Image (cartoon, helix red, strand yellow):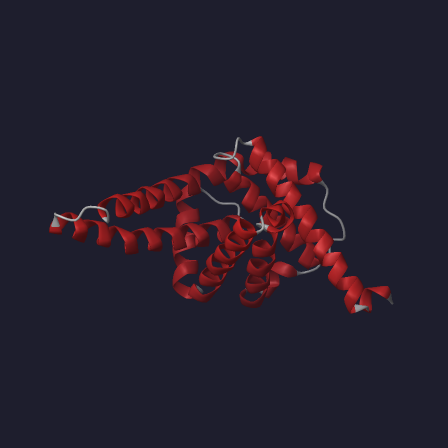
Length: 203
């Protein structure tokens, strides 16, 4: 009966979010941040899906095994997209400071929408990597298809990441427990709506 108590359910999910976020930090640091954050994010999304499938406990050893398995594939698929997006944002930031060259300003302004599109594609690819085991090329194709057919889910994920990032900048201590895991929960709830077959009870 305790499982039907809203307060108990709320506390249970808060503890799950805090635990998964700690696991996300540990996996990210294990890859020295740059090479750790992408596989850590993929694994956190996977573990969140397992919770929504009915799994009661997720252990760090389980996360770390999946992280090692995902490290090469996820970095090879997503890091190029992220590097291109960051380079375009940097180009926009630098060119926007130039006042005397009209064509450079046009170049910088054109870099911004391209950077945003690539960032959204990276979010879509991240979501697909957490669901399907596939090659780098197929991961990009899956991301493009998700972006085309379920744009709202990609925007929801990106928006929730922005909100949580902003909140954690205001209250850094919150970032320890609630930086990425709430984003993973929102994303997987959205995925559950469009692909309910992926959330059958975990065996």
